[in-house]
Image 1: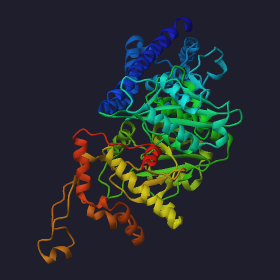
Image 2: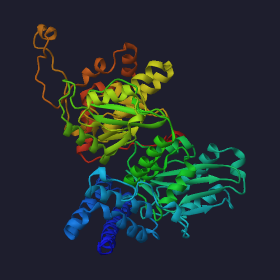
Image 3: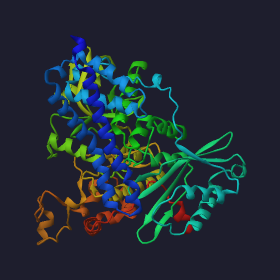
Image 4: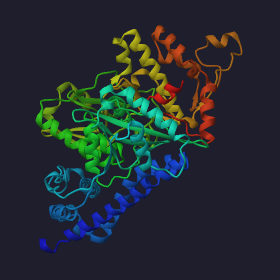
Length: 574
């Protein structure tokens, strides 16, 4: 009977669905160049959100198709190792085979409850590395300075062409050559073996296009990113040349929207990025180029490997306990796990479903480098021995509907994962005066850049922001976020009578979406010195007119510039 079970047919339908998804993914991605050339910034934002939503839409379509075609046979989980075997044979010669495995996992999880998950039925561990033996095509272009640096740079932009004209290409090439000499040791630029290697496809995100690769000699290498901008009515400009690993890492940060890039062989491109950014986990690199579901697979594999090979145990994350979320972490694994409490603080007016929708919203908006990306998981199972008793007791107390002990394992029914950061309130407590000033400067910039992307954080307390390893301030608590254009910013009206100011209740009406920026200083800062400093740095945030002007620009269709790198080109010109 097992031979008659339609394993091969099911495997084929799953792969056909994957091909359909990949074709639609490619169509959206391939439109990025035209959107850049035509300065269609709102369309670029819409395309980014559509591509993120595409995965779940296509998984749902395939699941429904399978249920219609195979009815009862489909749900015999004991036969699914046969489906997996048939599927492996189908994907062996593909160039996106690792993504195909993740797709299979998504289909399986959509059909079966998570307690049916096993490596026999799906790809908890990948089968790909040992099977990759075919020759793969080159995905990069190489350049040597045979005619000097300007000639090498000119050759690059003869290969990377756009339908829109450059504003002043000779000027930009001279500036790039100057920046290259300034960024690298003098001997490097004179080395006849100096090579620039660039990925053959341009990467697009928001209002920018990026050439990505590396500079190398016989003994050393540096990452290389060349961002381009298209100024409406002015043409394309080469904006900078970046060789600092930390700055390039920030461009590929977990706080950024995903790149649009044509990638024929994802694993090889990710391997290329990993060589120039060794500090990045491959999960983050897959995610950065739009394959966020496979990034999730790679994250999960890294997590179970960490748990299996270390003595690390879960603890409550350092910082002020949240009123909506409870947060725990593994000291040796740079991630926090966030679960929704069963009961919220009385001061919180949101409910569980609203919190879930807020966190999912963050996935599809432009995070402008100021909001941590999240991954949503259901039915995580961890060994009971991997929890410190105090941590487990707290989780069971605040979220008994989400965290359940089952024998020698702990079931976490629903959670989000985020990159772990140092809470900003804790950072400033032990920072020097110079570090405090720098952090508060970046904190204000984070709020302004989120606002420019039409995001109002809601609860802007320092405890809801974190400091990354690169010293950037990032927002990570999303239960009160909203679109900026949904908020009604008001000035506090003058008191009608002297007694009004002494009353325990305000003398003016307050609607649910009303925000009074004049009230921010005492709300954000108990420390008077920090309050005065922030007022000097970002006092405009206390003015309702500042927020209203941003709203007007957004409603007028303006997509405000927020750059993921320091703009050395402007610094040089100024």
